[in-house]
Image (cartoon, rainbow, N blue to C red; front, side, top):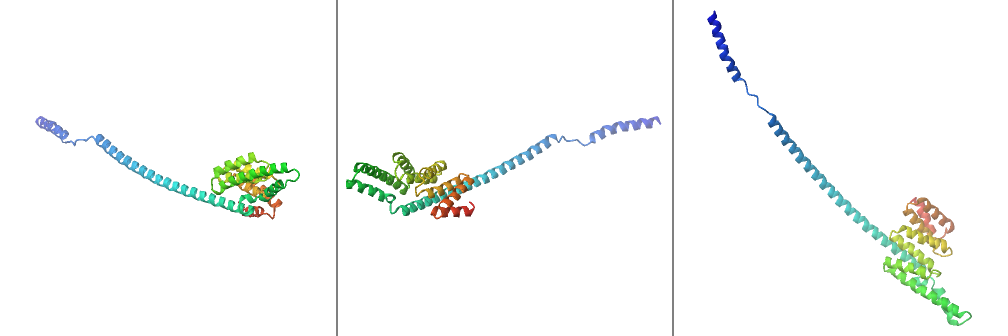
Length: 256
């Protein structure tokens, strides 16, 4: 019996190391897992960069398209401004005759004739005729710059005119054209001031209805809708049969 137990113990002692030796080795996957994570992260990072580049490229294309549209609109605005200015020129010439000299030509000629006649007060008449002659010449020179589309030069010329010939019969017209020119250059405050000068300081001028209409449009462009409507309604009341009054009616009816 004792011998049997010894034999079993010996077999067990030999079997234990064998079982331990036969146990499967546990591989450390930490390093491998970290490596796979880094690879996955790199792929994601690379893909994100590519997506970002694609988005930037799309945005650049959209910006280029919008810039092209802005350039196109600026060109159209310039063309419309030129066409509008040409209509103003045509209207001015139809009202005044074949040239701006005809606006007050009869009066200037009458003053000149009176001076030549040598009647009473001929010296005063001669001085007045000379002054009006200078005003007429300066006005024609300024208006010629409008016709040649030298708007900056025309503004300078008309500004000088209203300083040098503020009491001339052409002063209202000069202020009116300053309003037109400043409007064409989108200098709305200066335009409004010029038109307002025609209305307030030259109330008997034939340019008043036109100045009221143009001032109403300028105020609308300035975002002063109530002031614009009030002025145009006043124009329609005061000058219902004028061309400017008719245009004011159309503008008010349009709801602009």
